Image (cartoon, rainbow, N blue to C red; front, side, top):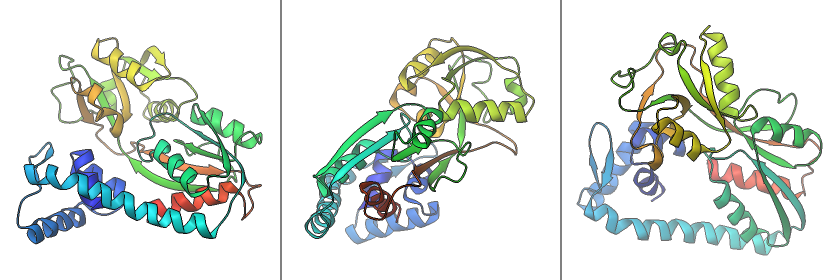
Length: 289
């Protein structure tokens, strides 16, 4: 049921497989097996998109309910057997894509209702500064820089995409080389964001210069500026797949040496085995299985 729901949400087998952590062929085989068991097609597949069939839409509410009940049962067992109290200070960058922070906090609260949760949202660089300064217990970041010896668990990776308006000179290409980005106008995130750090490093490594016209601290503002032709953007794939980006053209970056958007959970080295932070990390591990 998890596979069904993820494919339906992503409308794409490759993205769904990345989120679940299995091969695309394994995911496709599992969906075909479910379709054979039920005797009907659950998805209509094209080269660009996957859509649930009428039967697929009918099954989805039951699939979601089954997953919620299974998670609720596990949470009830943990709540009854492991009383945890104290405080938990969590930080995360906006729109990480590979982890649903709101859903994670909701589930943790249901498991450990006595824990007081404090949540902060800002760029990955600022989160690491706060973590080192003892202001946070756990941070979800999109960078592999400045981590030092901080305990880290990688959640997942996804490629970068070039976003342009449909009438841009690059929009007709199947993929875009780094050299083709030379001297173009760009929209990007603020300097503390993981995507900005990743882009700056990648552009420097390829010797490509760009004109940064707009710097923002909100995903939807970035997409709106690209739609209006004020610059193009290099963003993680999940940002390019947002409904607000439907009018834009999204293309992969061609060639070797293109970094991937990597999301990790990082903790404070002072965390003990009985701390609320440790129980949150256990929940993250459970969700990756």
